[in-house]
Image (cartoon, rainbow, N blue to C red; front, side, top):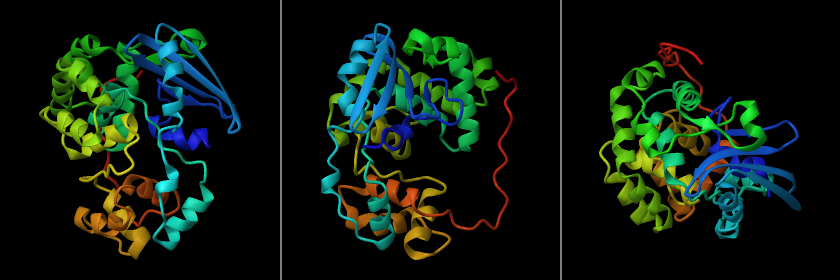
Length: 292
């Protein structure tokens, strides 16, 4: 098992205050659990992993550790159908699909990523956690790692701090609607994927894209395909057909042979294929009003 590869989807960019992987492979994760804030430290090798935890949420994080590391995942259910996918599968035997069991932790940063560049979204996440989160329990707090706010804490973020973090009113309002029903959304972690997706999308502003991005992390959903993404269809289409431009419909057709495992297939394709060549300038992100 490759810890870095398995847990990498939980990292929201360089400098994420809630997640860090050190050069020696040690993983630090600060989370808001049902029991309160907690910090998890993972070290060791694929053969033997040592876990340490701090804070009121520490015992919860240790109990959830097997699922986090992919114990509920079944990679044997996957059969490569393309040469590129077969090569990626062979080169990354340690890939597992993580399952956090924490909904808001994945939902809120996914909302922040709606229709903006990842650079903008990650910067907003960093700013909001540094201003409104709390110090991670244990030694990670001294290194400025932060636990995200609870539902009430998100509800109390003033409008000028959303604006200063580069989060427009539409995304901020979606976060606020989500935290008003936080208990019901967190309970979706125990539901089947289809039911959990429907519950998430019952909140105005949360659509298939955001639901899939969340369920990939909370449930380890092997078949949750991210539709509505600006770049993903082009990446999949270019990798499997050589065509520079593709649509969601084309992407779903190409992934159809992997029914039940389309998210795993997507991750393997992204690990082993270049992006299509660009012929237009990148979208220029809007700078925030302040920095932290």
